[in-house]
Length: 600
Image (cartoon, rainbow, N blue to C red; front, side, top):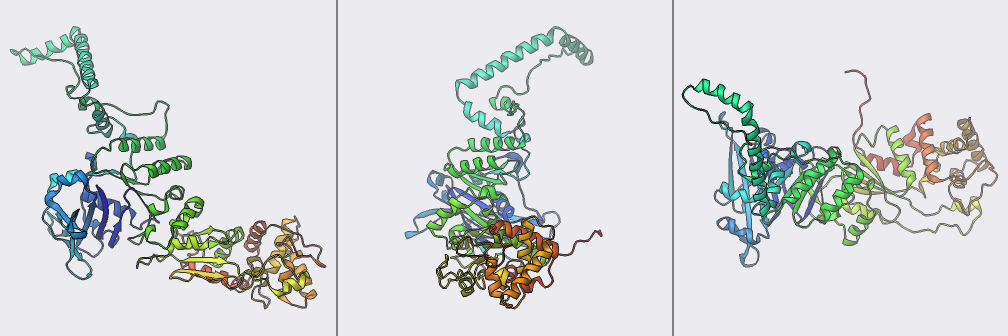
């Protein structure tokens, strides 16, 4: 039996959502307060938990603000042999209505009664529309009768909460998960009889030793109190007759003093070991708790390969998210779900991302905005530029993902939907025009330049996913040229070059060399930018009459240019930057950070 679909109305931050689950692994990702825990808790409230101490109930704060009704519906399919428990509750759908499904709905309302503030019913049947969307009310209602409490016990899930005490979970206590596991392994075997006999023999030895000395004194004292009655006492273990009682006194621990991370893994392993026939659903919040990256990867690999159970987990770890199959991931944002199975990702795209998606690129699943850039230069330079424009990328919760020159569309498809939902995460694809300016050939006297014209680029402009193409050529060329009217970063690029060479007066020298170039090329800014490209282009360029020009790598120049900009803070920086950069930054960053103040 599998949990096929969850419908939620008016629960916490969720207005209304429908989530179709995978049969095996389901990974909920997204920023804080997006609704991941609300989804897990809503399912937990409907199904309950196999752990006795995890009983959960509704509170008034679970109702979405301003509402007085809520509904959570779980739909099950592939019932198999489990259908026998739910015969009178089944709904038949599909061709000729022959396929059985099980619907379980929790419908609750605020009563206004101080003694019984919440009224809750568990109902069967497929929910039907009862009203149009109206604040405070649910729009769908289950159309079946009451769902019996005893029958619901067959739907209990295994739930591991985010702030779990792994060490406590492994300690001896009544109803411990460890005792249940070992009891299942030993119940009805010869080992069970051997253990009980050994305990009884142990009790007899204890009692004999106790009776000789301290027991005699204790009996005499008790007899004095009871006067005519002779007291009979015996030393022994409490309730030793049942194997379960014995096992509840066992701890599970590492002998080599492992930390919380390993204890957390041991808890998860214990719960997975308890799965047997029937409904098997494991819900884990933040399995990465206390685990270093390598252990996270091993856990991800194990969970991905597990086909004996259905798993729902939430995570804030890009490390974990990068190792799961793309189809297992669902982005949660603003109280709604956006499964990767409903994107424009092709099977080829998914295979590509599963090969090349690493921990840095997986940040895109958690970001409020995303820059998809071609190379390291943009990756190194954009944070500084945005911060100086008072549009800090970190403060906006945005991420920069380097995807190369040909993979941008594959990554962009993560955010392009095939359903009618709007994810609303702004994505900027930054790409070079790669059409060589005529000035490059004129300045460097090369008729057969090493870069070929690639023609017109087809931009992606679909909702919040937009393409920003360089104004003239490459990032470096556009930085040097600016608006082609004198507003540019050519002098700052030259200052970065001198700084990389260890020149102490790099600011002054960069200024002087820039002025020399302007004079040499008669204030032709495009030719000055073309001459500067000698620094970046290793073939088919010449330094001409400017002997101070040397070749440097694009990443180191970008990093040093960022330092120069931080140091000099040029006036009117926005006017000096290529317009496609400022437009991309404005598209992705929408929060203007407040200035820092030490006042409380």
